[in-house]
Length: 182
Image (cartoon, rainbow, N blue to C red):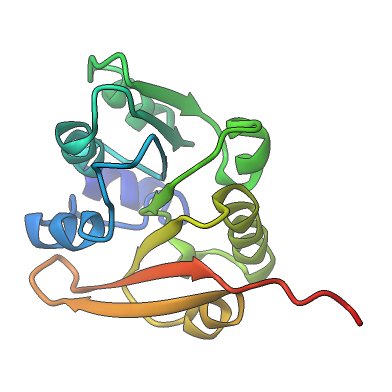
C-alpha cells in the first residue's frame, strides 16, 4: 500500500500523494506544549507519520486518539504499539461522539479538506471547535481554499512549508470567543 495508490483509489479520502515531510511534521507539532498536554486528537493520520512523532514527544500519562476512515491505513496504524495510542476507525464528521466528554488539548489534522464540500468542512470544523475548548487546532492544507472559513471560526496563524510534496500551508487555530445574543 502506498500513499499514491491510495490517492488514486479515492482522492477525497486520501488527499496526499506522499507522506508528509519532516519539515511539515516539525511545523505541525511546533504549536504543541507537550509538557502540559494530556489529550491529543489526530484526524486523518494516514500511515502514522505525525502519530509516531507525537508519541515520541508526549508525556507518559498523555493520550492520543487517532481517527482514520481508510481501513488500509487503520491496519498500518494498528502496528504501532503504544498504550497511550487509541486507533479509532471512524469518520471525523462524528468527532464529538468519538471522543465523548474528554477534555482535548490539541486537534492535529491531515484531513484533505480541499477535496471536501463546504457542508462537510463546516461540520468537521464545528466538531473540532466543540471538543477543543481552549486548546489549539493545527491543520495542514495544500491550498488556501478554506482560509476564509477558518478565519470565521478561529483566530488563525498560517505558515508556509515549501519543502513538502506538494508544498503545504499549516493553519494554527484557536477558537474565537462565542458571541452571545444580547
